[in-house]
Length: 252
Image 1 (cartoon, one colour):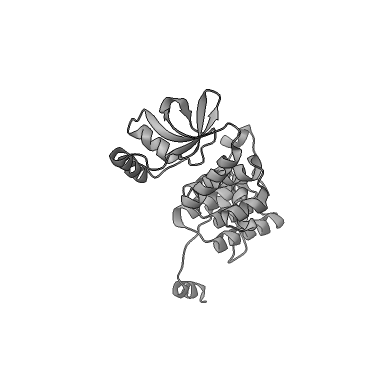
Image 2: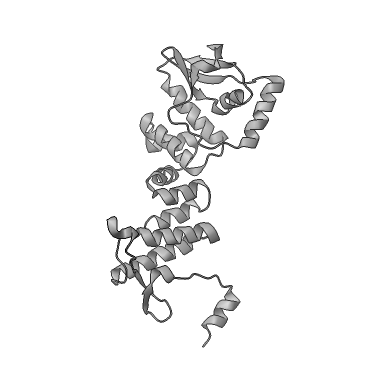
């Protein structure tokens, strides 16, 4: 049932799918609503004496932006979970969400609405592997996850770096990748090197944690690819060489 509701009676979802919106596009939408009105009502679910947005979060936010007191809404009953799931899927297909927002939306479809991996993949027109890959983002270390969310590193690079168990070395590689760029192939090479160094006893598998960490410096040894001597990982330096310079550097 479509009706006009007071904005003050409408709540946003507890877990908003979109944590960051394009402010320029939002302003354009607000201007359009100001000029010609709302062309498509938002969808809300009745929750006691109040309502919760199911679909149309951007339209609702645009109304707030221009100080509207009322909004046209398609009101569903409190048990209308199917519409909520469909709205999430539709929003994902229509809008380019940041990776972690996308992952949280997928988790909602898979777990909260019980669609499972197979149905979620079919509804989104994606492979089951793609859906599983997005869900894996939710288990990334927080620092790496934030780099993916801000698009400083790619998902494939993040997945490789996340496999490095030593937090200190992982952070060093992640910061380098975010600042200078990195391919998944390069990240995989870094990860394999750390695994080799751990097996050789040149590096602890994990960074010890304790009250003394802030005051006691730790030396973490890795092997030099050229002379195979061990040296402190903190002093590692990575440079980029074109094929011509690399051949000249390697020449005897």
